[in-house]
Length: 189
View (cartoon, rainbow, N blue to C red):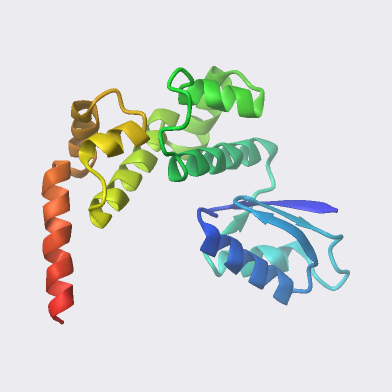
């Protein structure tokens, strides 16, 4: 059994593409998750370079380094946590405690490793993930800003609004309005 660590897998479509590409090469896969694939032993006629090339053609990459593998694992955990968050995570458990619990390393080590590898802090990465989720919910226009703030564990609507404005240059209300105008103009086409 071989476990491949794969960079840039962020959604179910990514899992499907990776599965299809690796199976085309002849790999027998037992598990495909965000950032990780378990395969039976590599076929003799397939090299790791061929696997890497097939993945790179689709925007992915193999991770060989143990530290980089840990960074990718952090990213996958955080993406899953933010994408599936519905206000269920204990408010007392912040992201640092969550990562420490899941990975078994002190947060200061994880944070330093992430910053060195990715060129941004873990905090900024988490904020970016949350802002993308806010944008998604604002586009759907099904949730109030209060509901969004609650689901993403913001301390207040004002805190969410301030972070959103710092990241995007507009308020959540302006963003929602702009996406509604954009949607209406597309509907006319």
